[in-house]
Image: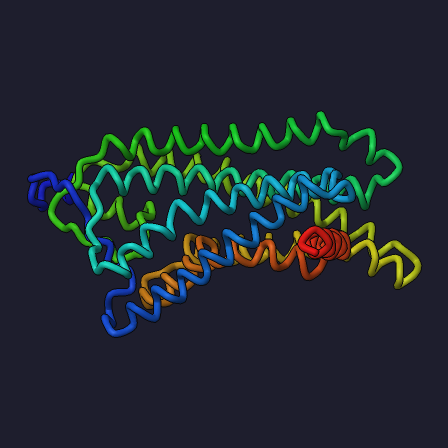
Length: 316
């Protein structure tokens, strides 16, 4: 309340996303960089989707989840990068309060859904490695569909609960958000409303949406690693680990950068470094997901080669 009393109570209608505007000379280079990242992200994830749909070899639970992850990454990137590219191209860093809230809303939904979807993928790998004889019965098409639906519903519900409070906030005094997208923490600092209830709701929301999936994923991988270490032959251990290594890399990168941004104290952390960590989970992770799965997965590479040969044959 003291913060609200100190501020100018005139509500503002737009924010200024400072982004990477510290060095104007770098804006064209940054535009080209993020444009390439966006095009690679869209191309790579659309390629994964096309392969999963068209190739019969990939009609398995693991690739069903991978296809959903690629679709999610397409939505994830499209909620942030087009606005950033427009800002870098035109120099217009203004965004309406409603537009900022909508971006935050979709970003939070996609993030929560991805946490739960990655948890479902870790459960799939747990069953494949730890309970291979029961895998077909425990991970059938109906169960896969239910896990994906639950992931999306959980993401939407968690996003709606938290953002219903955010939409009631009044913003005043400063317009500047020192970030490249409308993230929760920088926005809340500009609010002249009482945010105690919102912070409590957000804490509970984050626990359910991020901490619980992380703990479930860790539990799955503890069981997976324990089972792999019990395999007598090194070839068998290597083969078993290769089936989950791609997913493990994606999970490590995503949660590692999130912890660096939201958990590690940032009082002495330079703002530029904070933005770089944010770039990892908002921009780079959706781009590298298809790269990791394509480079480290023989079945995906085989399906890709077959698709290319069919296109060449069709062209001839």
